[in-house]
Structures are given as structure tokens and as C-alpha cells.
Length: 256
Length: 253
Image (cartoon, rainbow over all chains, first blue to last red):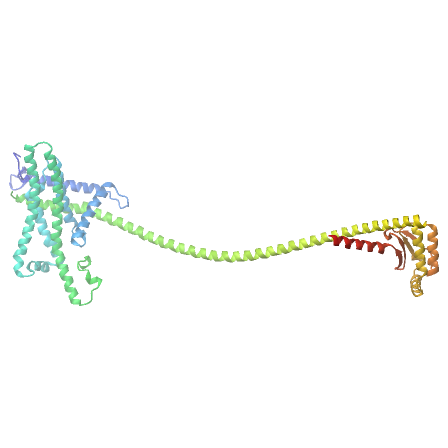
């Protein structure tokens, strides 16, 4: 690596001679490091899980983390969180740890690469219709794009694309800017200020991980909740019966 | 700011692999452990609820038994109180009877002592009166009291009504050997001879006459035969003096 490289994609560690496109850059390497850390820590803690009332300290931390994400997902989606926990939770944990590890000298967060943030945003972009179709079927899901009129179809498609782009650029911009600003300030003010910027970068990375995961959950929830409200409303109208506790629960888990 | 498409695809794959790995190593085990713990807590909660219900039942049973015990205790206390009252009344009655018996015994003893004292007083009074009379008679009339008493007794025998004398004779004929003369003082031979003569003349007795000295007569002579008695003594006189003395003493008290 020569000079100040803005993106870790350009930090090439290995490249195939037969297929020059295939290469190992710092983004992928640091991503693997984060993945290895997360998997190793999870395996180390969960291989001796205790179901007693008194818990080991690390298990307590993991349970607090997982139950916190589960409650957050339930609060946003108002539905069973276990279905979304692996995807949303992995988003949060990966981005969070990828950003927090930037405190280690020499480490560059993979989230400072547009390729990584775009890949994560693309995953969300693909997950939203998957969850929506799994929840309400392809016909009802695709019908949401032409509601309330057919004229809304291009706007809905643009909205889907723009929010995906926004996800990617928001995370990339925040993390890249922090890295670049810190690198620039090291040249001018080598003492104290970079430390403060590192601390601020940790806070920013944590917040960005939370924002990314929450927005992803909101997008997924919006793709599934609309259907339930419409279905329950139609059921109530079909019955033409007085309100009961059953048909008052318009967005309950049992209506899934 | 550009996207490296190989990195883009690699990161998508990496992320999907990470989702699978974390689902396998993190979320699954953690959620299972949490569910097991929640199940354990729920089981403990249910067990605690069942134990609480059992404890409530036992408490209710204990309360019921306590109530029954209280009722039985009250009944027993009523019986015990009644029995104790009866026992106390019986004891009081026995004590009262004992006290009455003791009192009666004491009163009898007192009466007996009183009688003995009265007898002593009467005897002393009689002796005193007789001694005074004897002394007076000797000093003033030069006569003995015993002699006068004997003479008076003889005179009384002689002055007896014929009908009574006959009645006595009829009684004495059946058992003539039992004539006995008792006197408070020692009779001399003349007096004995005089009395034997008077008995033979008045009552027709020709057998032996037994003479005995009896201080209880105080002063006088008594003739006994066949359960019949003729007496001439100062016992009635002394007894009347004693009664007068007792009345006077009772009035003063």
C-alpha cells in the first residue's frame, strides 16, 4: 500500500494470475477476521451453555446482546422476532464489530469500503422481497408496488432502490470519512486529537450499526405489516360482526 | 469511490456465510438455552404454584383443625369447669361436714367438760353447804347433821302413805335380799340400827340391809330395792343452787 488509500479494496494482498479479477484485498481479509472473531467467540461461549438460573459472565453478555436485539426487532415489527433475528442480528454484529475493531492499529474497517456497504445494502434489498413474499405470497407482495394506483409503480421502485443506495452510502460515508479525517489529522496534529477522533469513530460506528440494522428491520417490517393490516381489515369486513378481541388484533403474530 | 464488483460479490457471500455460522453457533444455542431457562423457571413457577396451593390447602386444613381443636377445647373446658365446680362444691361440702363434725365433737367435749365442771361445782357447793350446815348445827344446836338426816329419813319412811307403803312392800317381797342403803357419809352403828328398824317397821323387811357410802349423794340417804328408790338428800337443793348460779352468770355475760 503506497500513500493514503481511501478504500481498502485497492489494498491488494494477493491476485490470481489466471483470473486477474480474483484477488484478495484488505476488505475481504479484514471481513474474514471479523467473521472469525465473531464465530470463534460465539463458539467459545455457546459450547458450554448453562440453562441454570445463574449464568457465566460471557454467556450473560451474549444473552443480553441477543435478547436486546430480539426485543428491538419485536418492538419494530410487532411480530415473532426469531424469524428475523439471524439476518438483522448478523447485520448489527458484523457492522458493529467491524467498526469497533478500528481501534486496533493497522486495522481498517471493511465498512469503510463501498463494496462492503453496497453488498450489505444489496442483502437487505434482496431480503425485503424475500421476507415479504414468504409472508404474503408473490402476488400480494408485488401488488403493493401498484398501490394505490398503477402510477405509483415507478415511484415505489425508485423508493426501493434509493433507500438501498442510501443504506450503502450512509454507512460508507460515515466510516470512510472518519478514517480519512483521522488519517489527515495524524499528519497535522499527531497527538491527542487522533485519539479523540478514534473515540468519536467508535461511537459513530456503533450508532451506524444500530441505524443500519434498525432501518433494515423497518424495511422488512413494512413489507410484511401492510399485508397483514389489509388482510385483517378485509376479514373484519367479511364477517360484519361486532368487534371481538380476536379481530381487534390486526397485527398479531397469530395472523401470520 | 468505486465498487469493486469482485469484492462486492465476495462480501455478499461472506455475509451470508456469517449469517449461517452465527445462526448455527450463536442464535440457535443462545435461544435454546434461554428457552430452556424460561421453561425451567416456568416449571419452577408452576411447582411453586402447586406447592403454594398445597400449602394453602394445608393452611386451610390446619385452620379447620385449629377450629375443631378450639371447639373441642371449649367443650372440654366447659366440662372441666363443671367438674371442678362440682368437685369444689363436694370438697366444700365435705369440709363443711368435717367442720360441723369437729364443731359437734368440740361442742360435745365442751358440754362434757361443762357438765364435769358443773358436777365439780355442785359437789363443792354441796360439800360446802353441808359442812356449813354441820358446823352451824354443832355450834348452835349441838346436833350432828348425819344424825338429823338419818332421823329425817326414818321419819319420812314412817310418815309414808299406806297405799305407797303397800305398793313398795309388794315390790320388795319379790326380792328382799337386795335392800341397799347408800349414804354420803359413813353411818355409825346406831344410825344403821335405827335405819334397819325403820325399814323393818315401815316396809316389813326382815332380811339383811347393805350399807354403802356414796359421796355423790352429797348429803342424804337413798334406799334401793328391786329397781325402786327412796331417797332423801341435798342433791336437788344443790342442783337448784347451781342452776340459779348459772342463770345469774349468763345474765351478767
